[in-house]
Length: 155
Image (cartoon, rainbow, N blue to C red; front, top):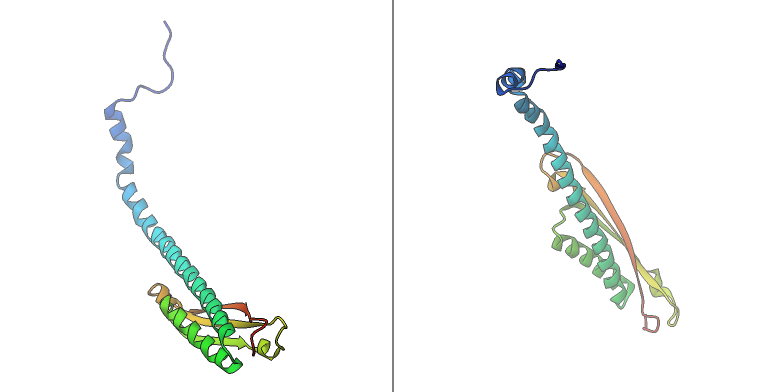
């Protein structure tokens, strides 16, 4: 006859005795991993909301440039671009601590028949606590856009 070598066959009783030392280890693992997973989730939320705020600033800059290009004078272009950018950020529910709109209206000095454009730069300082409570500090988001002036329109 051949003799069996190796470990004895497993029975439910021997499995029970082997696992006694591991009791409660799953609870410890969950307790250790829960804060890490919570922080990862918070980081994803802040990143997503920050991306949405960046897109809102880009849209506000585009709207400001477009509104300025439709204005009749360079002074009207500056004020209408400022109003369009602020209302665009409010519509997207971006809570800016400071909003700065710079409009380059030098295209209005070009003679009729010459291609020209208007550029707008929107800068917004976003409070990070507005993105997720208990996150300190703020971040500055900025975007620029330009829009052409009608070449044959009187300026």
